[in-house]
Length: 400
Image (cartoon, rainbow, N blue to C red; front, side):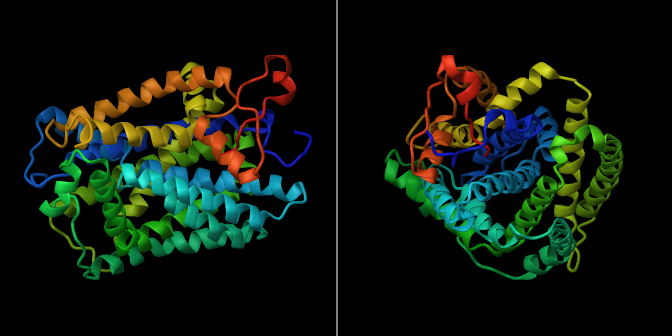
């Protein structure tokens, strides 16, 4: 461990970033678990009860798609922190990150076998594109981000107008046989096919979603360039204005969009849904930052922080657990239960992970998958178990 080329030390981590990761991870769990209710031949005719309807609207406005957009910002921020650390040590950041993203692709493949909604592959791919901006000025990064975000509603409307015929893996009998099978390889094949057809070659995902992700990663990159998360008290007035403005916009835009849907208005040129999602995500995120800056919810935030330090481990475990609960290789729950069950099951699994994460990090320096990723990335061993005698000096933890 004499080589200085190593992850960023604990005292250089930014607590609010880990807290936001923890919050986003809750939304990811809810979104993924709820999606299992829509895998099956009956998914289009299943009705929700009143309680499930209320929960579904709560999920729609507070969690749905807000998590992956927030995580995209945080990925860009973490990328910038780590690439600066690598460059400062005199290492080649391009070769380091190409290798690091390749390893993330491997994790993504494993995760895709358990869940057809994997997002790691997208971060690995877009992480490579971020390398083109690592020497760019904050102004260039912000302008590029702005241009991409401004184009999203027009791009979304255009992509939606393109007729693309792809198999609906989640509702086609021949594919569902794989999901219902008690053979592991069949279930893995179902998930990999779903990942391929619904994300990798689907224009709505492969183009529109990736543009949004990349734009938000650049926003996170910009946040690191101006040291935003370490200067939150300085930006308190900005956070308040952002929260109030985005809250008002979220209420107005949400109401108008609901009316447009009921009136069956077709957005042929300008589709605002992703703008609404991003606006709501910024509202919630700025609210969390304000609470943190004002010293509120310290106990809750302490648990979200440890979960955020183990984002990759917790994310993978959520999907593996879900696969065993819902598919043919496990408890075979499938889509047989009410909507609220999937929502609260996700909350329960996440809550258990909070306590496990706190216990784990009291004994170990890294989450298990985070540790493996760093060992493979840096191509050397790091101590997993904490050395109590040297905690102050050698307590090294990951930045992503």
